Amino acid sequence: MRRFLTLLATLACTGGCSCQDKPRPPPAPPVATAPAPALSAPALPTAPPIPPEAMALHMQGRQRGQEGQFPEALQLFQQAQAAAPDWLIPLYDTGYTYVLMGDTAQALATFEQVEARAPQGFSESKKFLDSLRREKAGTVPPGTLRDFLALRQLRDPKQAHQKLVALTQRAPQFVPAWQELAMAEENLAAARTLVEKTLALKPDEETRGLLLVHQATLLRREGQEDEGQKRLRALAEDPQLPPSVTGLARELQLTLPERPPAAPVP
Image (cartoon, rainbow, N blue to C red; front, side, top):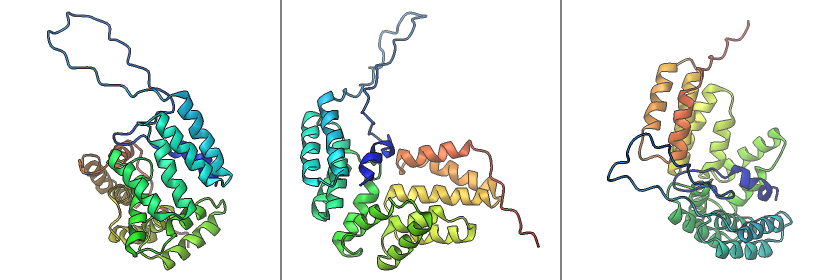
C-alpha cells in the first residue's frame, strides 16, 4: 500500500503529459529590443491550473488507498476527475487501484483511457497496459501484475530478487519482472542475456526503448564507448520512441564514460 504514498514522486512528465500538481506560471514577456514583426507565432497554451478542491480529493483518495479502503479511494479519485477533467493523475490512480483490487477488466479499461489521452505514455501506464492485455489474452496468469506491484514494495533486495525470479518462472511472458532483473544485474554478461531475453518478449515501446538504452550503457561499461555512444545517439533521434526514452538517451550521452570492470586479481 505504500505505493499510494510514493506514486506522486514517481510520476514522470513525459510525452504530451505534464505534472500539474503545481500550476505552471506563464512565461515572462521578453524585453523588446527591436520593433516586433508584423506576424508573430502564437504563444503556446499553458496547462490550466489544478483546482485546490481536486487536489484535496485526490490526496484523500491516496490516503484511503494506503489504508486499504479501495472503494472509498475510487470514489474520491472519481470526484477529483470531475473537478479537474484534464488532470490525468486521478485517472491513473484509479487504474492502479483496480489492479490492487484484482479487478483486471476495470484496470484494463482505465489504462486504455490513459493511453488514449496520453499516447506517449504517462508514468508506467504503457507497461501496465501491456501487462493487463497479456493477462486478458491468457499469456500471463491472472493477478500477475498485482503480485509484481506487491513484491516491488519489498525492502530486502535479496528477497525481492528471489520473488522476481519465482515470478518469471510462474509467468515467463511477464515483461516487467524480466526488465527488473535485467536492470539490477551487475554481471555484464548476465545483464546482456537478460536484456536480450526481455526484448524477445516484444515489450511495449517505452519498455523496449529503456532496454535498448540500458544495452548501450552496458557496452560503455565494457569499454566499448564509441559503440555505446553511437547507439545512444540513434535512440535519442528515433522519432518512434517516447520522449521519456529519447530524453534519457540524450542525457546519458553527456555522462562520462564508465570504466570497464577490473580483471580479477589472481
